[in-house]
Image 1 (cartoon, helix red, strand yellow):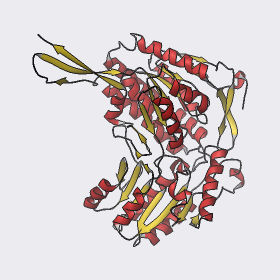
Image 2 (cartoon, one colour):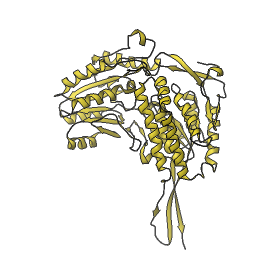
Image 3 (cartoon, helix red, strand yellow):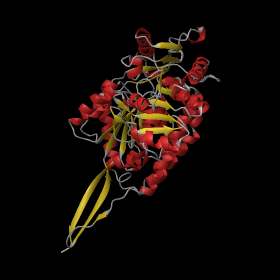
Image 4 (cartoon, rainbow, N blue to C red):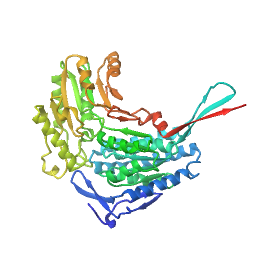
Length: 487
């Protein structure tokens, strides 16, 4: 959808300046609760990517950034975190309306952004090499140096949080950034671009280019001036980007899909498990890579847990994210809604027992939006799409089990390996089972949960590389070895 510049929201951020796309095109950003336009943003393309990468390269080579005392760089990141805190309510409202998620959830997301910048601010002056003993009269040491210009291709489900999860360590290491927000949800990233300038970040260190993924995202992945690519999104898109990145042999972090299982043992505290399962399945309307969309529960407690899950899911209050009392918002777009409804219908056709939900919301005030009722299937066939594929919607599948080997086999029987949940009061069993699960993350007695200082990573087709924690900042540096003959 095109629109005039007079009706547009914030422009592209390139070299510290706001500007329209070179093509002059704009695209509408819709409210998923109504499918009405919120505003329009520039629809950038390859020429805009060229400009942004050039601006980022110039900033990287400038002594104002590359020669900056790392401690000062850390103070700028701390100031960015404070800017996010100071504007937390505004940013949360932007995300709530643009994505559709309840305002309460959006506030948690924005808080994570500020905490992430505070964490990586503290690491900025602690990136160091080491000395290595070698034979003879020689001195050997390593240095860690920034990669250069880093590209960040963000998803639409947690727009600012997942963008900044990579931006914060990239900046702490001394890199410069080109961010491509998701086409559907660019508004918080554009506002964030204004806040970093107020925090003292030099012009060109952070650039934001909105536009279609096929144009902007691919142009970034293939650009000869980009030194690394960080992507969060679907496994299919990640594979295509890896092919593009492989041609240039540059580092890439890919945080991709998941089909995550929660295991409920008979000794679990069912009240806590119930809360974690509901939140893990229906938070952000199930639109998250680590959604706990599969549950395997011991047969002794399955009837009790399933009855409570059905009751609680059916009673969740649907509505626009900004409405007080909303517990679950709409899906992000009409197309995505139709895809989720198609998966649900396929599940019913395959013979899965529908416990609740199973279709769009029918209330008159919700019909214009992309609302799907929380859906629970019992014992779906393993080949069913809802059982094996990432539906990325409010769809939960449940099976019971007799012994733990059966539960672990089902949990591991997926091409993904992102996250798993485990509910038990037996500490020994928790540690033993955690070791057997083929996932990058395991949460025991709460789900989902993470912190800026702990790794976020997936195995198998859930991705490559690691977000968050100390290793994330190491990704954004080269190691250089220096050997000196002292004779």
